[in-house]
Image 1 (cartoon, rainbow, N blue to C red):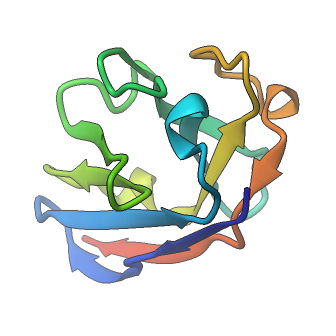
Image 2: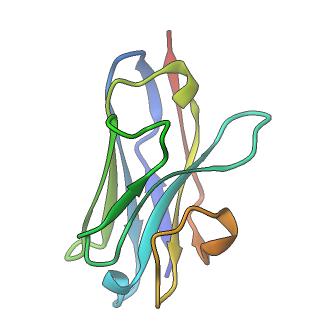
Amino acid sequence: VQLQACGGGLVQAGGSLRLSCAASGRTFNRYAVGWFRQAPGKEREFVAAIGGSGDASYYADSVKGRFTISRDNAKSTVTLQMNSLKSEDTAVYYCAADRPPSRLVAGVWEYDYWGQGTKFTVSS
């Protein structure tokens, strides 16, 4: 599966932004998809993940209650809706897929396919 993330840009603190991850492949609904982010000088970290059917999701504590992950398997897309943005949310965001049998996991090493990343900056 190939992934392409988009939706980055510049947003003010407290604002909202939506990132999208478009996937290729006919069996997209079998892949769990996660979002990760990497701020300058920091390691890539887990943000959120969603199961193949979209029924289950999992969030990092730092974004819980502010970010929502969802998917549309008919369109092979996963969306990350981000609200109440903070300056510490500034990063390059990546989407990734875990091949079947896929799980809701948070480790960078556990994902098999990665998109190219999209950057956004939260200005204070």
